[in-house]
Image (cartoon, rainbow, N blue to C red; front, side, top):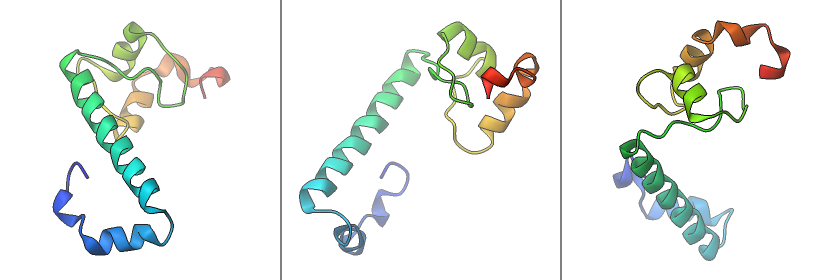
Length: 96
């Protein structure tokens, strides 16, 4: 929806319709649109993820330390990078 909206066509909706009602498809689209929007907004606020790659809830300060100077998402290889950059957590089973 965000990166390839031109691929959302009648065929796409037909495939979704095999699993979801029309109301559910609209709800899903609104949810995705809302999430894309607020994540875009959070980037303008220098907002960092609230969770570590392994799922722990952390402060913005700890998140900045884990993720670096630029807020990132959990896409691509960034999770691997973030885990590799927090060696003090590597041996603590509560951080997995």
